Length: 386
Image (cartoon, rainbow, N blue to C red; front, side, top):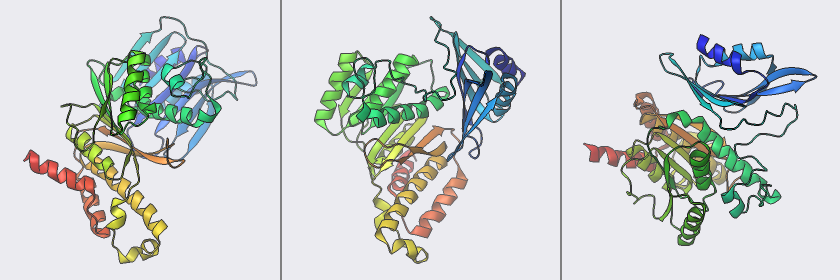
């Protein structure tokens, strides 16, 4: 880790803007760390904001202590991204501990970070910087100011981009990447993905948004053409029947209702998609199947049974993804249209089938007497592959 310590020693200074440590090797404990410079009572510090699945912790450290702490974190993480006034730095650590440092000089020096202790939260898409699609979708004014009634949507879009930011090292820069957005709807997040990955991060990507509503597809297609987003296409179609591509790198499915999420996940697994991001909704299927006398205190009350069914559905989906060789996280996401908060499943392909997850699925389904759609779809896939 000496190479990492040297990079930190040379960057943790007044020109440091922000840093992110992500890609944890363990599922428990700290899953992400953000760093920023801070001036407090005339002294220069670095604030570490570390996140578990349910909590966030803050700590202010001197530059020397911050460098040591960040280096120690990297013993359990795969990547660190650093932005300074003059360059962007990505540090990657392989499974065997090999350190790779990638540097990209900026054409123009960036503005130094705001060191105030009570500064506003920094978003990936900054307020005050006009973004064409946000303006046309009614989130921003012409000069980049966020419209007050759309503040929640602005935060939701940035939160979603943070989930994508974490998996950037999993995406291949050496070729065109294909991303499918099933049930794209008004496409706030579809446009945000394209803008962030193609315009800001300079990835060669092709995004296909799929939805059943003709008027929505027509409107989004006209906006994509207006912005000159040549590799962003919107198509009318059903998740279950779509077969317009042979290889997909990332599948996004937001608010696909009930078993439509299962069809999207099964498609993604069939394509060996490297990354899957899914926000399910309206999980009704298991509610009509579940039978278990032991759970009578839950099953006898409709509201409790409905909520339990939704959690059981998403828990099984996460386990099926693990079984099929994905490292899966269940994260809290601010929903765009429905409830104030929702669950996001983020899965990254490892290629190693998880037999422990397979056994857990079998026991849980037997306990509840259920046969979820995703399991049935994967059985069909296995039958076709034989």
